[in-house]
Image (cartoon, rainbow, N blue to C red; front, side):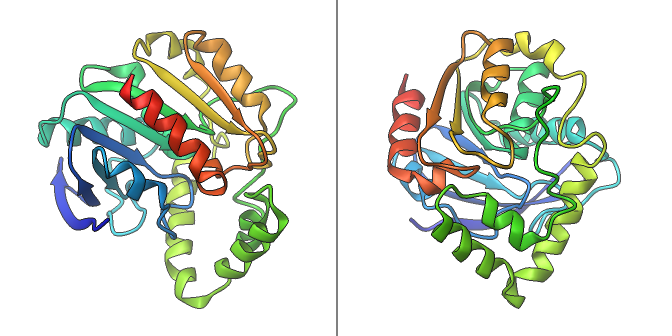
Length: 257
């Protein structure tokens, strides 16, 4: 599937995005690493939907505007983007940091959101269950532990050390730290407002996630009891990559519902 790259200005900030496919709008929000590698599941989704994939502020080719200090600012910027593009009934699919941003949007307003599919979202803290400190471990080690399959992890670690990827990876890491450094990858106030997410929600989690442990899946489900929770066997923090066929089928069924 061919995606068209473009840059738009939202509230004075340049936002780079890729867009492809046709149908009702689907907003994909990437994780803490940005999109150094294009997940093929987006090509699958673009067969049925108008898939819109922005670089979050400071990631990729999007600028880091001075008014974006935390994830709530990202949420407002994305909400402004949907309004400016006149998009309604948007299916939001987010991974990790991006799923967190999607939730921060939804607790503020679901007016333009039809549903949320959350893949291993950040955003809350479970006492006694620390996340991996992605800002302190080496990028190659982070890439390695993102997968359940050791061979896939080793391949990802090798790719992370290739020089052509490193300059952008550093910028993405800075952008991620800007949003998730303190406290680490969560908003202490988010859980108290998750009841405001009154649209259909599906939570997908790799059963051997070593970045954000699967106990967080149950915690999110506790705050959003109407959410559909599915744990993906033999998958780490990137189930949509590691178990693409299964996750793709689950997403298609959920998004059509």
